[in-house]
Length: 136
Image (cartoon, rainbow, N blue to C red):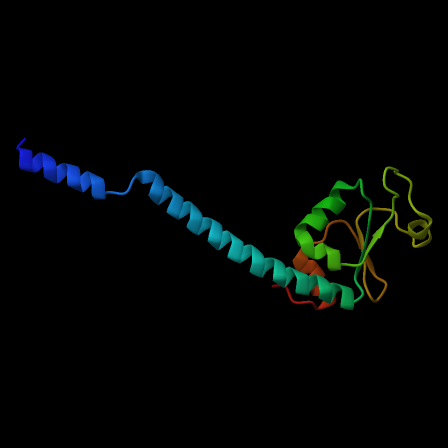
């Protein structure tokens, strides 16, 4: 190879960005896209959960119930806006008097404004249908 060719090759190699730079740019772009999606989606779920509260939907649950945890996880941070009755004191598996008097036997139990109840994890679409609240 001539000296000129070697020099041209060295200059071209110096101009090329290392592969890790491109990987970092792609990773950064994905993180930004995820953050934007999360912010808008969670804001929409907050409105949905606030609507559930305004429509008098209420969830009865227990801290030890894995299905209750699944239901809470489906709403994420927005669950803070949902009226929730804890039926079991922390650290205990006893059912509170309030839940016994309300006739709650299984967790989670959703109660709606017309006093109808549904036991088990409800998909958000079903909660929307029963309350008229729009999903994001």
